[in-house]
Length: 221
Image 1 (cartoon, rainbow, N blue to C red):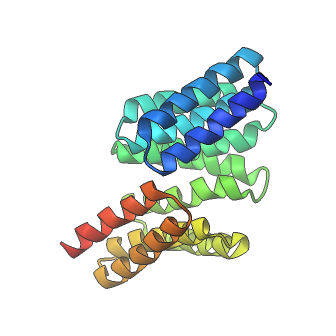
Image 2: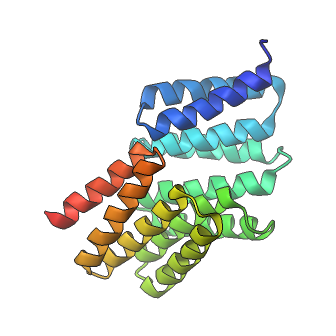
Image 3: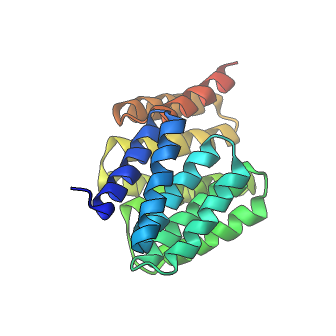
């Protein structure tokens, strides 16, 4: 039918799916196209969401500066969106992960704080929590605050029980694996990462399953 909004939505969703199976180039192409179309029709919500997905994609590839730039452009777009609090919360969660991977823990903590404030303003949201809680565990571990990391793991367990999907079970197990590794409990870390990998595989998220496999390889080396 040639409807720009429908095409943009399809491209954004396709980009997310291509990313999960590790088709980096195809995912980036789809997300770039979705951003262009959303900008043309003035759909700030879709533009911000696609920038978030693009930022996560670039960050996962190690393109941290480019990923941060995309996420910051998403923040700008989200300010004009109807669901601005939701979108900004997710974007700041993604920025926290990006800055953590860049080794800038203070910046990651700042982004986490902004994301938490925004998500608390509109209550429980499965998609917001899916980004925010796992990175909160990682930030607290990086700060050496394992007690706080454990509290976030507990909140993640509660969310996983509430939503009950393979993806949520995977996120919770992965966070517990990261925490156990930080506590130098290698056996527990291996067990949690193995569970997470299985759940991610069942959820058809090959990229996340691969990350768990990499963590297992390091623990078992």
